[in-house]
Length: 265
Length: 206
Image (cartoon, rainbow over all chains, first blue to last red; front, side, top):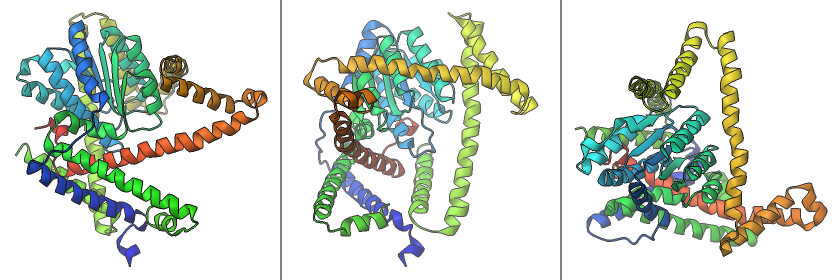
């Protein structure tokens, strides 16, 4: 019966998604009623103010990259999380009259970055400071985009290099390009194979879930912050499941493993 | 309306895609979601034109105004037009296009990729400098893993490959799985926030 209606090996994920959605709606309701949620300090996000401040003092631009993922891929959530950070960075650069250069690899992300930056300048009451010539599409080829970014970092001597989104092999090229240009570098990605490069080469790095929490953390909007709390509860559930799985496997009782191999493979 | 319409479209398409992923509804998969995916390809194709227009506008301005290093903009525009026009006129199997692709594009791409080898060395040097307790642990772990992965390591001490494997299967795997669980939950919550219209940063956070 189940096989006829559901994709059986995604059943656990289906239940989990419904559960997360319900908890999200409940926490948002609580946030609307005025409940405050505690979120731990994320050093990488605090460093964004420092990075933009440094660029302002030096009179040099800030470079922002939203990653190289398309909006139709499974990594699109990382690009969208990066765009939330872009909104915050653009507000800061508008406030301090600092140049912001945004480079894009995916053409469908370009109009979104243009709109995010334009709205941020508008929100800061400085629409005249918004420069559309600084929102650039470089190339949809991965390494051509990387070469373009490196060139901009070197020529414009960017003082802050902020990279938030999904990155692949070009991550280290960006990070080293920024280092050579003398930038303070803040990076964030959920692509685990690129994290070691960012951690080694950047001043601050947002690891995995921190990238997804960034928009809410920076906006401090109660409804957005409630979303981060849901992530924390999800981790608690995951930890409990890991513990149960470890105990049952150690006791050679395969019921949990059998269940997950059938319904969550 | 400018605010409500994108939120409504996001909600409806998001729910449809979620349903299609979990539930077997033949009409939904074949017609509705299939059409949405086709539209996404069309939108992406038009967006590429927007990207080309952005490049053209900015670099023509640089050339006309004679800005610093304007010749780089000229080279870029010439390269872009040649690589776009040649396959349109003579198809991608044309000898000229194949020559340009093989002798220019592939070499430039390969050069950028090869830079990684040098950058890995310089980034590793900075990361492994012993300045903190964490950097010391990182250095020791890296030395064991590197020696374990090379024949010289096993020649020095037979334990290197064994400890290298142990570090990677126990510590690295556990750490990576922890990060992946957190990131997956984060992606799920972000997606739901966008579907429910709570996170509107993708259209300027209005």
